[in-house]
Structures are given as structure tokens and as C-alpha cells.
Amino acid sequence: MFAAPTGPATRPAKPAETARSAEPGKTPGARAQEPPVVNPNPPVPPRPIPASIVVDKEQRTVTIPCNVAARKLDYLSEIYPIEVIATYPHPLGRKAHETVVTFKDIKPSDVHLALQSLGLQPGRPTQGDGKPAGPLLRVYLVMPESGARVPMEKVLINSATSQRIAPMNWRFTGSNWRQPDPEKADRVYGADTTGTLITLFPVTDDCVIQTDLTPKDMSSMELETNTEILPREGMPLKMVIEVK
Image: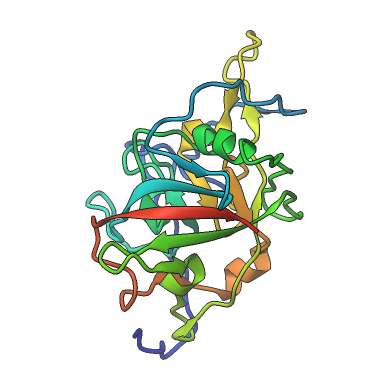
């Protein structure tokens, strides 16, 4: 268990972000230059879903392989509060320093397509103020030894209060699309460029799944992983996304 802090929780200054993280390897403090958001968002072009993503249409679940993320990255001097759930590992993952799990060899848009194969349609992501929209989901981690399916909320703790967090709504929002070159019509699925699959707080709209948490929640919740439940860093496990 985490000891209750003796004073108000203070969120460390981000190593390389203002509204969103700078690209790994760039000078700390430099703001990432994002291509503009393109709306309305086009559908994700159909393609085969990677074999490592398991779609169970009877149980209405999507299962992906992942690993417990490191909480301290070598190139950073601080441990940053959890803001996202799943992303590419460093250096590809924009938010690999503040995630619960990482994944590789699949893209967030692959998970988007897998959820669509269950009959879902994405809603709308948000960044900052505003409400995300989309079908409701549940998110679990499957423990590697017992096979127990643990709700994602149970592997998180509010380090300011030493309490577990309450169940949340998870929504299939889909990602914004971006136009890297304003002189060309080519568009990219934003989450594929940042690597963010699931976010807790509205710190990015380049993601596939968001919760209903707000910036106000972010200012009052300093989230950390619950090491009494979560396996050791680097451990392979599975994440299950279930249609609610």
C-alpha cells in the first residue's frame, strides 16, 4: 500500500509536453508539433486484423497481448502519474512514461477495427473540456498465473488518498485523424502516430478509448499502479476489452 502523503499531492512537471507530450528524444520542454485535426473523421479502411488480437464475437471481447510498463524510464528523472492505460513502449509511445501497460506489433487502429467487427461504431474523442462519446466498454487485465480477469480500475490507486479508484465508464471514441502535410490530402489515424490506445484523462484525442474523467478529476487524482495486484514490470499479460 502507498503511504498517505503528508502534504498536498503535486503533479511533476511534464518532461516534454504542455498540452501533449513532445516526441521522445526531442529537447525536454519542447512542444510537439502536431499536424492539424481533420474533421469529419473518415472510417478506418478495412484490412485483416493481426492474429495476435483475438476477437470473440460470442463473448463480445477483444483481447490483446501487452506487458506491464516500467514506471521509471531511464531518460527521465521523475516518475510521472498514470494518465493513460495502454500505449506503445518508449521511444515510439508518446505517453510511455505514464501508462499501465505497453503493447507492440499492433496499431491502435487495429483495435478500432476489432471493436467494429463486434458491431460497434466509434463515437467522438475529446481533449480538455468536453464529453467523450461512444459505446460503453469494460477493460480488464488477465493475470498471468491465475488467469483471473481483473477490472482495470483495481490495478490503480489514488496515491493522494491511498485508496483504489471507483469503477469508470470506458468509451469507444475512436481517434481523430490528422493531415501531416497540408499540401496533400493524405490523412493518418492520430492514435497510430502517438501510440495511445486507451487514456484515463482527456489529455489527448489521439486514442481509441477514453473514460468520462475530466480535467477537474485530473487535478484531484494522482494515480499510481497498485503493485499489490499488478504483476512486476515487464511481465507479459493480456488486456481484455469487453462490450458493456
